[in-house]
Length: 420
Image (cartoon, rainbow, N blue to C red; front, side, top):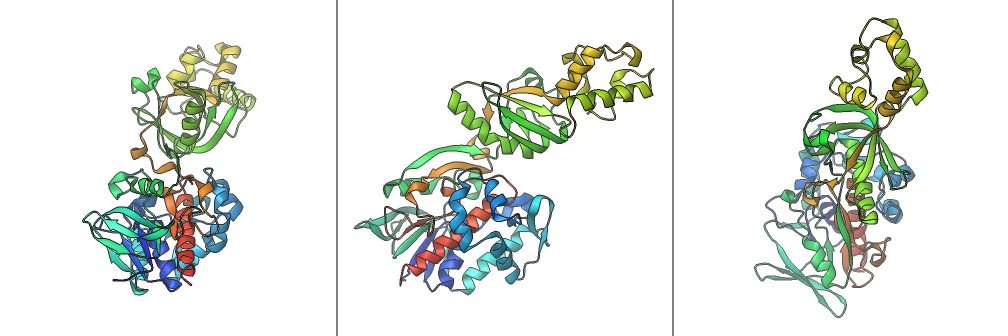
């Protein structure tokens, strides 16, 4: 079977690359080592598949802190609005939820996966599952084909590597593509986990005293060694038996990893602001007034309506306040200290869970070696990269999948146009 383009990897980027290449006239073969396509896509968005984010392009790129600016050209080819139009054109109705996240109305990721696979088949893409690739073949500084692990050699004019990173390996993302990139002369920037829970060795974590406690609408800040804020994210978080999880912990994770690497220290300071919409003075005044309204009530009971009950003893101990004290006996200096603590509840973080347990892989194929207009290698003609194998990473919320679809479409389109 003679083909023009071989796409390796049947995830978000690979499926979109196959659809794009075939729509521009290429004969496409899609290879995947697993027994089914779109496995990571099928579990994304909690199994509902957050297909993109509706924010304006500049805002979208800000939410891809790992080299998001590289995507300007790809998003010009295939933007988030193009992604929405594409899926709606396949009969998938979409709905917008909080913070611009776009989901299928069906709330089923399988709807999205099936639509992509069916579209590829309708356009003549030949799909082979259970077909692990051993190596990409090169001749005279250009692609000549691929060799499968069973020894079979498949010839082509272009190869698109869309094998993902090393995160969520049970979906097939085990880092296979990095070796093929290096064989072509590409460099791989250091890989690290992003969008991953934080770990801590603090006593309150080790003793599991707050395990399972969920905090809503708080702010998490990562601090550098000089006490300067590196990043702050507001939202929800969760105390676990190993540290912190939840959306804002995940968003801060890449900054923790980078700070640990930068300083060589064993831990990084983070803090929780339990009332991000109030100043220290506002909280101090409001809570004193609350205590005054029920002057005979012990302060631990005064605080119950506004603070998680399990957290109150920790906060009062840190502020050196007796939990039984009533309004008329509250030491004002200690109450001010309590106000400062609820605005900056400090923890030390010693790292994150592993890259295999992360949602996203940081690092990847060096972007200096990739043409952002086409996703083609600057080193080898006919070699393209797309998706998470590239050194691009964003926050959860539809940003990474947008990068995958945009780079996949761009790689597919230009691999086909390069045949002319």
